Image 1 (cartoon, rainbow, N blue to C red):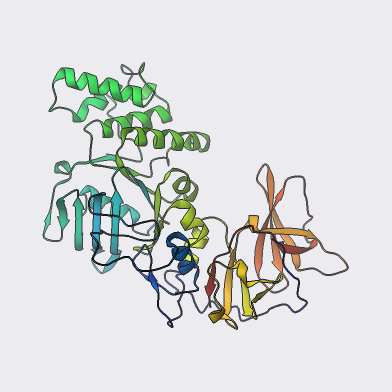
Image 2 (image 1 turned 180 degrees about the vertical axis):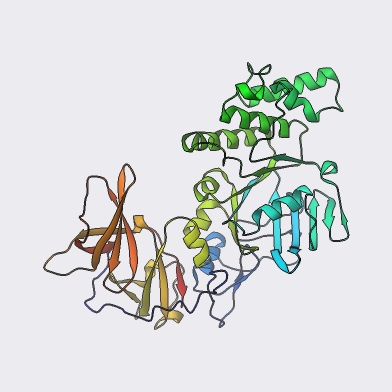
Length: 433
């Protein structure tokens, strides 16, 4: 996507006045009517969040409040009560004066793989522990199917919930064989039923010939498959996965993401995973719930959350992000790399003309080229070799920093002056300042 260059460079105030200091969420304009986001917050027209809502729904209208809906209905479609296997309703968790989880509303569909994604300390593991019954919510309600399993004054014990858990360290019994590990939770079945179920699961996880081995004879990936099979054996309503790939090396981690997703889908189980790994969440999930500071920032399909982040925090956490400071004027956006058509912005509306904005750009949205005739946008200050490509960091003359993705055969020297062009072939998310 080309843009028209402007000799006048925008050097607007660098203060991010529209960003909340605690959460990084975008302050939305208060005029006009808004729609409702997947996290339950109000979205004002013209913001990136509003654009995402209107792109998905076609109208941006609010879902009928009289419908039989549950939890986090939003731009990825209404979650009906009949679809919902797990529901969290205004769940809070406090440890003394510290709030770990604040007002989480979440509905997980039957057969869905949903990932709670966020940095360390964001509340995702505490949320998982409350679902499992290892912690009791300070406020709110958790239901599995039609049964309420957790409220502040009563809580169903973990062993009485129809929930399976796969732990980070797999927690296999070292003195039991693979078959015995998988059969551990099947004590209420006959010997014939147990053998049949274990055989079925060994086939599902592609380990039919490993049943008599002990855990010390297995690789890391095989241990994970056995742990998964053991958790699936009793056919739980919900399977919880706590950082399931963190103990695997990088190569095996990528391989096992695909394998675990295949197994979960073949089993038809509803699953909730927890991770801080953005690539993992994007690659295995049906939906992602991004958490920050104990709250849900955004819920949606991976591509929706990545391409239409509702806050600067979500944009920054999901991959490399830079924000070009710009001003909307007469249908154009003036930025530190030139002027381009405001129609490039997702959900642009003329109501925002003359407003200062921050435009989200990722490395594949920008391309550097050698400066010609002394006209440059900035200087190459670092480069990262990532195999098939280089990622260059360019300090713009306007004071901002951006990254440009290039084929490994296209090299720039450090301190080289370059021009930077916008080449994105998709609408860009943006945030009023």
